[in-house]
Image (cartoon, rainbow, N blue to C red):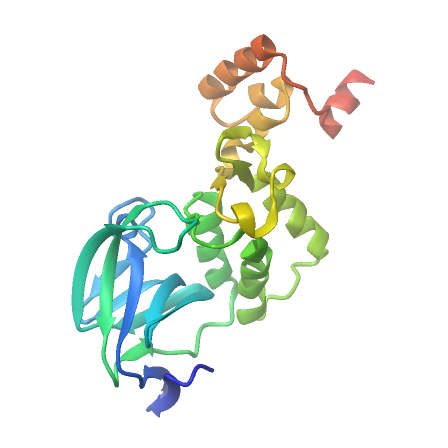
Length: 243
């Protein structure tokens, strides 16, 4: 644990307390207004998913805790800025913590599937994972959700998760392309764009575009794929129907 954090017991909860001089937590302002809502103000505390950048003792850190947490704050301000050199400019709500404030109100999280479902539905299925996590860390954040809640591997290998994420993250310059094909390490660690799970079918072939959830956008995409002569990737169901 960092020197500016300390665990303390208050009754039935264990709090991670900030014991340094100053700390600022940065959350994209849109997390408080968009649907699904990912952050909310509850009195003098913020409830959100524990994936955010923060500044403590004049240094930058990133929390990668993909479960619901709460932290206390003293002051709030909003600012349009770029947190890190390779990240995009965004509007942030900045929350200031002082010595003795709760960095994590209660570390005793629920060990059940509901926490993983929250991570999946709010961030993965809804494509709300901000381009603030280095691409090289995405798999580990995903695995952290399973480890922290003690869910385990869900009965599948890590390779299955890697394949899933490789399709979910798109080249932001051309979302029809997997970002993994253009990844160059730290040079472009934040140059991805997340695709919604329900839209992934349109990135493979004309056939999968047409059988997707959104028939209107699927039909449009099928026409564009044909006109632009994009390569189709034959799915298993197409092989069954064809042969």
